Amino acid sequence: MPIIDQHLNNKDFFAFHIKGNRSKPVFSPQQQLILANKNLYSLCLIKKGETSFMINDERVQVGQHHLLLTSPSSKVNGASVSKSWDCEVYLIFFSIDFIFKLDFRKDFFELTKKSLALDNSHVFALSMQDATNLSNLFKQFIHYEKQGHDYIFKPKIIKSLAEVLFCEIARLASQNFKNIPFVPSRKREILANFYLLLKQSFRQDHTVQFYASELGITPKHLSVITKELTGKSAIELIQNVLVEEAKYLLRQGLSIGEIAKQLHFSDQSFFGKFFKRNVGISPKEFRQKA
Image 1 (cartoon, rainbow, N blue to C red):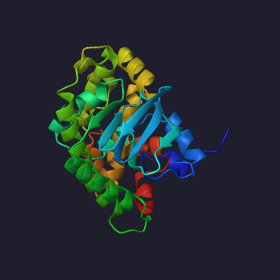
Image 2: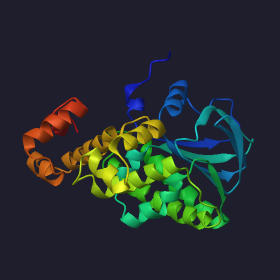
Image 3: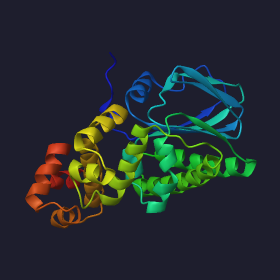
Image 4: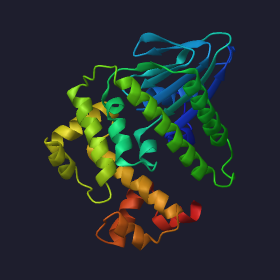
């Protein structure tokens, strides 16, 4: 089995700009392995020409000025991409953790609830103007993502562009969903509601019991669903969000005591132990390396 580069494996988004029917594979073997094994959403904009993907063992054709959205249950085969000679495609894979790092109002998640709950992939036709605007956003996002770690303000630029990009896609998707009968599976609907509740409440409530109670199910049932659909238990998802928020606040220069208070840990010591258990180093060591 190929050895996976830890830097790639720890990434929560991957961005690609694909042009023409080149013989070079779209994804490296390592990227293909990661895309196959991680639970990722994807966005694919066909700016020009056409392309197709194997999604859940079924080939899906996507033409010019169309947007393809897939959920983690729609596994995209990275080795199966087929392109027309003149195609130009923007493609982004991302995890729910990446979305949670962005600063969105509650109504954004309400608008995107359907896409979180749907089982299947969906292809939307765009106007020429919408396709052009979206491709410009993708282009900027990918440009800055390729810059080195020493590129000043890179994380903030990526975060800001991602927020604009996802808000625009949510707007377009909400228009298209009006024409789609919304019949999600019960499990995916529970998962979507859990994500929405987690985004709103993770700073105050860290227990599976709280979220399960709010959703009207047992903690065991919630964990079974999240494990089946994401590969992670409910407590792992809660802890992931807390860890990412803690990392963000550490990078912003807040004191460890203030972070512990904001994230509703009982004290600084307990927060420090939680962080080290999940990250492998102490908050102080992380700040020194960041």
